[in-house]
Image (tube, rainbow, N blue to C red; front, side, top):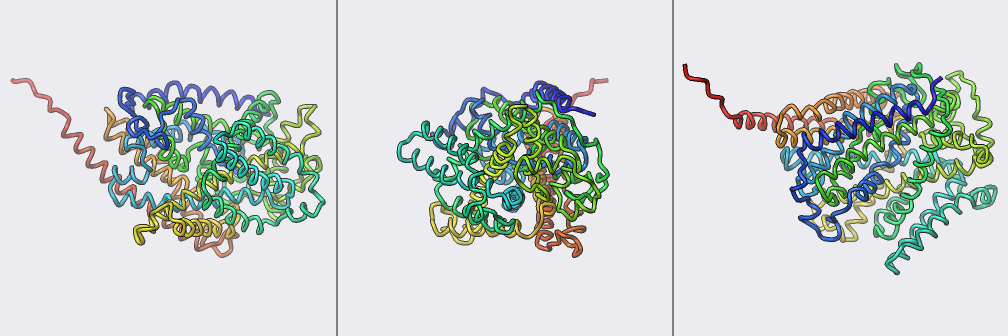
Length: 601
């Protein structure tokens, strides 16, 4: 049997070679990044949004922004197909597609003074493509919130300990925000906040069996209603009160958990108990209904290639880059680091026995139909102190896998329940931090679109406008959250996310064709674009035909079908606009090539 260390060493070697050689080639030769050119952070420096930042500080904040729950949950869900498809897609997708996508989007935004991707699309491809990109971004961010929140629902349902730990992060973050607002410093409060979060985890066992524990033992439907209500307040409140301090505190947990996972996998070197391929590669699996292709590439987005990164690469980060060469460690290196996180998550999931994995990550009826017998799950349930059966969504599976690895250390074997609940809280807080930011972005997009009809809506400081837009955003993704299962909602998220990545590659190919010395360099974007665009449309059609418009399917939902059709149509419109632009650029470059005089006879 294979062991985890083999995959870790192979991943580190491949990613290191990619960063050293392909990263240098792409940034220096293809994009022609020139440090003698002044970056937007210097040209537009205002001390608030445009601030020149040291490259490694910038790399840290960029990685923290892009590495949300996606690289953790996606590989866990895709483990249904076996470890080989997921491992190959993580590496190939990241090296060929994800690192290129993130770098070229950041570069394109910087070339346009740090503007958003929709504004870049408008400038590079025309107003129609720009408007379609903005509308697609609204759809995608809304669906993303629903997909991520679905993971939280199944992690916190019937889990009073986890619900208590996650809930306590709200008053702790608010207290930190108030303290920093009043005193102007957060140094001492940060240490207190981290200690309070740890105390919330350790206090969890004492609330079980109490009245508070009964209140916090919530059904999935209740959690699905609470989450969008919470998001409304997080979106409408000032960012300094909840969003920023909560994200700040979660960054410490992110570093700690990622570091512990890497150390645990390297030193414990667990056995990979999954086969390379399972019987579900042709479809019909209990976690994902579809076949391995195209669903491997839409299930694993973050970690391989993710359109969600375009929101960051054309948002905060381009306003902070100090020198043009910094985009290699920030964007290219950040994506490679996220790939490593995805591989670690895959290892944690596939280190479980397949029967235990399916018992956790599929509905009880679906697991019973498989005819499998669990191996370690009864012991794990007893050690953790929680019924682990039928907790779909990937978060619980990952937490169990990580707990199983950590508790193999002799002096940790009695702390299984604490490890598990800490990982659950880490995942939930991480996702909710993304939900806070994502819903706020959706609110801004809604206000901008409605502002074309009623001008005051464009004012972000107009309270009625912000409340109306926040309600619309929360109701939209809240409906998606309650209208399907993880299979259908995560697939919808995957299709929308990878469609956004396709748009990023389209814009990247356009700007490379316009600026690069050689037209052939355009292939760096066209090759991953061709694969991804076909994959997205095949997956979208499959879901529409077999799930969303199939009355016999569990995920039957004409509304989701309508959203999918609109997004796919928007993708084709943007691609057609790009074809027209590429033709113009190719003709212009042909004219620019000097004629070679023939020697006189």
